[in-house]
Image (cartoon, rainbow, N blue to C red):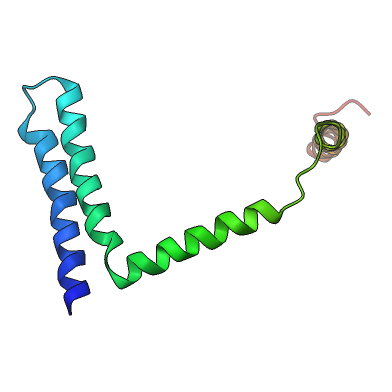
Length: 116
């Protein structure tokens, strides 16, 4: 029950931050943006201390650990893969253009507009 109250309070802080943005319509933009950021920051701080917030923090930590285990490709591998993808895109574009031109010719012949 306490978590639901905390999450509702966090939602109210988000709404208050957004309302502050519109309430301060005559103020400078920086102040308006700071109002929104303060509302979202307060909501995040409150949400941090709820059970779902704790699970999210744990999930984020585990995600960071898993990211460290990934073997990232080298610059050379990345460039080679990008080159293969670009070459494939060009070949497919030419192929689809040829198919389109061929179908257009067939349709024109069937409609009696082509020169046979």
